[in-house]
Length: 195
Image (cartoon, rainbow, N blue to C red; front, side, top):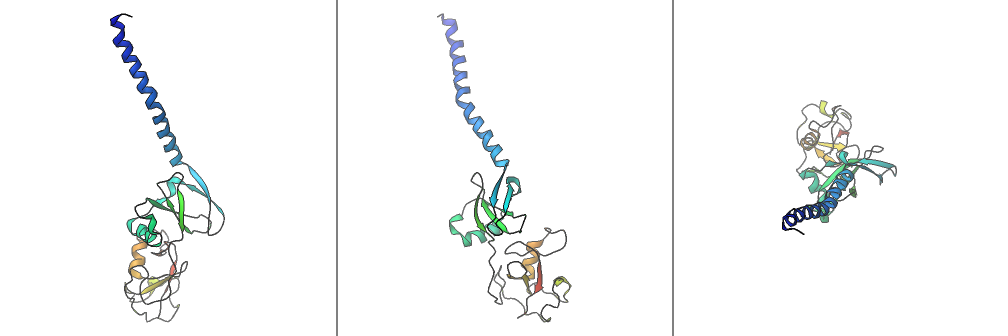
């Protein structure tokens, strides 16, 4: 073989070797991206119906929501998590997002509370409501002189949270004006807590 051909042939061989080594990696990355975008099916632990869960519809948890889940399941600390609501019963399901497909770890992390005179969410003391029980049911924001530390009751999980925490959880998240529970993130929060 002539010396003039050795260098070009070596370069061609090196290029083919590099292409051969990188092609499986590129194909694997593309395959994973496609998998992450797909939906998967999961049986809802609450209503037992099959949910079709599109990966892009799982909402990543905010810091406060992550802390709530980690309080219940400490081994989930430092994990990337997201929430998906069952389209049949609206129960909240928390998935690990750092697995493929996402892995269901907990359902309905908002725990019902025993009735105390503290907000379930921020644990600050609640103000005593002066209205008769159920007088403003379904229209709590119409109550006269409603204070940030009055308690409101979630119709879904029975948590009692202060008006301030409920308004913070609801901010710009509902189109119909209904209030969301800061514990289970469902509506309605429609009763004033009296004690």
